[in-house]
Length: 397
Ligand code: V1P
Ligand code: CA
Ligand code: ZN
Image (cartoon, rainbow, N blue to C red; front, side):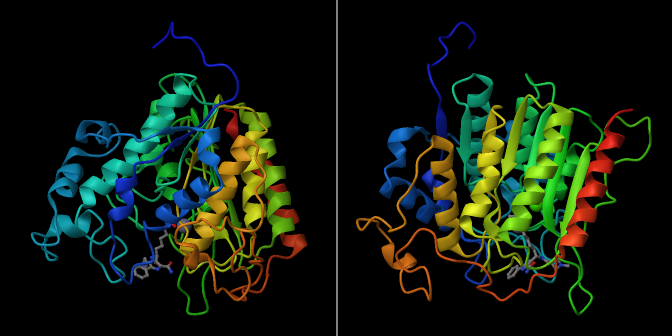
C-alpha cells in the first residue's frame, strides 16, 4: 500500500452498502435502518455524490469482528434467528438479548446487518490510514453501546471500536468524540486501560420523574475512567452530562470550548466523530433542542482541526431529520452549501412534506418541537466547563 501515489487535493469518501437498509428491528422499534435510505436519497438529490469518492464496502468477516468481540458471542450472533432463538436460554440473556424493553431484538438477517455496518466503518478507517481520504463517512455505523460479549441499546457489534483499533495500527493517539444524546459507554469501556484513545461524550444524564435513569445511566462528569495511577487509561475519558432542552448557543459554546481544550492537550493523530442525530430537537427518544446547523457546527469545528477524520452515524429516531442532518453534514465535509428548498426530483419527498413546520425544506426549526424546557442554566454549564477542564489535568501520569 505504501509507494502508491497520494491523491492530490482534499478527499471525502462515502462508505455505504445499501443492503443495510433492508433490515428491520421490528415495527414498533425506534431504530429504523430505512433512515439511511432517506439520507442517501437526499445526498444524491443535492448532487453531493459528485464531490466525494463513493465505496460499497464488503461485509466484515467473523475474524475481523473477533479483533474486538469474543468468539463465543460472535458464534451466537451469527447463528441466532427468530426461529431458533430460545428466550429462556442462559446465553441469550447474558449476551444482552431479551429483557423487558427488548432493545436488541433478534431479527432476520441480523448477522448480515452487523457485518455490513461494521465493514463500512473498517473500510472508512482503511481509507484514512492509506491517505486516500481526509474525511471518511459511514452513516450506517456508530453503534457505541455494544460490548465485547454483549449487545446493548440497539447495538450488537461495536463498529467504532473496530475502526479505532484499525487506526491504532498506524496512529499513536486517536480521539473519539460522541454527540449522540446517549453516553458512548461501549467505546469508553473498550479503551479504558489505554492512553492511546481519549473518549469524549456529550449526552443527557439524569433521572426522570419516576426515578428511571436516562439510558444507559452512566457518564457523569466524575466518571473519568480508571482512577488507579498505574493504569495508563487514567484520565483519558471525559463525560459531559447535560439536562433536558439544551439549545444551539449553549451546545455550540460547550462543544467548542471543551473539545478544543481536549484537542490542544491530547494532540490526537486522528479523530473519530460519532454524529448520533438523536440530539436534535423533536427526536423520538432524545431530550435536546438542537437545530440541524448547530449539530453540524460540531462537524465543522472538528473538520477545522485538520486531522484525518472518521465520521459515523449513531442514534436518530425521527428519520426525516436524521436524513436532513447527515446530508447537511456530508455537505459540510465537502465544503458545499445547500439550498433550503429540497430538490423537487427527490424520491420519497413525501417523507419531508406535510410537517407542521419544515415541509419541503432542509432546515426546519426544530427548537422545542417536543417542548422539552431548557433546564440547563448558564451558571451550571459554566461550572461544568470548569470541572471538565480540571479533569483534563488527570491525563498526565
Ligand atoms: O431505556 C432502555 C431500557 C430500559 N432498561 C432498563 C434499559 N432502553 C432504551 C435504549 C436506548 C438506546 C439508544 C441507542 C443509541 O445511543 C445508539 C444507536 O442511540 C430505550 C428507549 C428509550 N426511550 O430510552 N429503548 C426503547 N426506548 C425502545 C422503545 C421501543 C421498542 C424498543 C426499545
Ligand atoms: Ca454522546
Ligand atoms: Zn443515542
